Image (cartoon, rainbow, N blue to C red):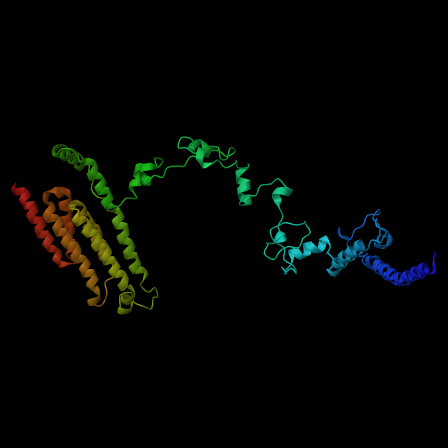
Length: 397
């Protein structure tokens, strides 16, 4: 070797040696950084298999052309630097905590992550809802609307039938097949008729007691009404022959109750009088009620033209009015006199319209009572005169 060639080789070695040393130092940087990231979770980007050579070995390994693998070293350095620039990936537990917590904006936007793509550990987009458990995947239970329906139905509903196969003929069978375990119950028809017509367990007299007087009248007249007037008249005559004398016992009980209230209102002390003005002021309201009851009952018998019952009622009510208190003041006895006048007018109307239909026995008894009643009310003598005319007309006939 000549002297010039030796000098050229020495110059090349002096110029190449610092460059190689710099490159070798840069190749050792990723290994040192990898040692610092031992505590982090390894990723696919920085995970290396045992057979894969280190960056330093790659840098020192010659390529096919005789030079070192400088290009591969530079690419690996750039990849390691980019991976290290981002923050380390959190653990799976931290991802679940972040998903259940408050939504927070991501540093980078990825359409794949927003649309549901990417890996299972990807960060949740702020536009997505909070994840819930998929019960259909974890268990075979089918959700229903409420637990009460699950208890009452007892079975799983069948698959919904398409609307195309519905038909009016198969509609009933389709309803019966909705819940196979439940018996079919027919709906009861609502009857708008009165209970008295549908309830056969109650006797007819008990049902008639709840009707008013006008309802009973309409019921009887509706039943006796026939197709022709002749048959209708025959039915009326048949019922008329069975009509009894009105019962005045209930009227008597009501009248005696009103009189009892008058005496209960009077003072009970022996030092107080029961017929003075103070006692009358306490009993005045009950006296007016007694007069109202008497007038209502007499008018009912008068309007129904039951003259025999009216005569019997006058005989009963006259004794009841006579037993009421006789007050010291003449003005306080006005209600008493009005009651006597009402009974006298009723007796006169019964004698005038009833006549001989009242019966011989009833007329003779009434004549004796009228003479005694004249001591309480003198105007009752007009009834005596009407009774005498009726008896004289019977004798003349």
